[in-house]
Image (cartoon, rainbow, N blue to C red):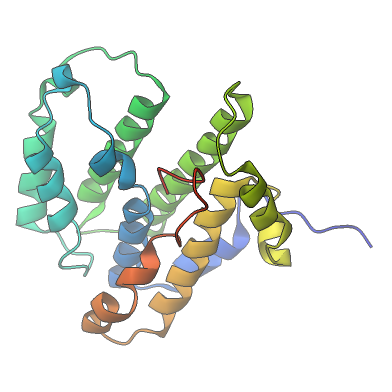
Length: 219
């Protein structure tokens, strides 16, 4: 029997799930995708010449989480405007990998700001796919690195134990963990009947479980 494979870039399951969501739930799914990428924004210092104050990042992440109804939010828009005023957006940047990850994540938050008020299926898919792409890029970076990162045996053990659904994607450790938590988030969103429930029941499950030591500083 031929082994089933799934292209994470063209995933019919993801498309079907997004299509079944209303606008508030698409907002929730997009927000949770970005929240899985927040570690490099909070835990890795940005270059000083970018001119991005940590308070601006904190305000962006905080205001981006409420309300999650798909509507335009003035507080969040103001946080985005403050971020866009940073010198980073007026200069050329030649980033290292960690800095590129930060830039792509910031770009995701800007995409969310642009999407609010419409929060279409295409916009939602773009943000969720960004999280997938960045998780996959981290696996590629690790594979290409000449440095041995502690926890490799535990990462391999995780991959050996994933279920058939995740295995079908044929991706590495970080991408698999992102897909695992993405699925759990979407399942929870589908079961919710109120936005209040969202904050209580899904928040803690929106970030991947603790990684093996040396396993993740990003997701």
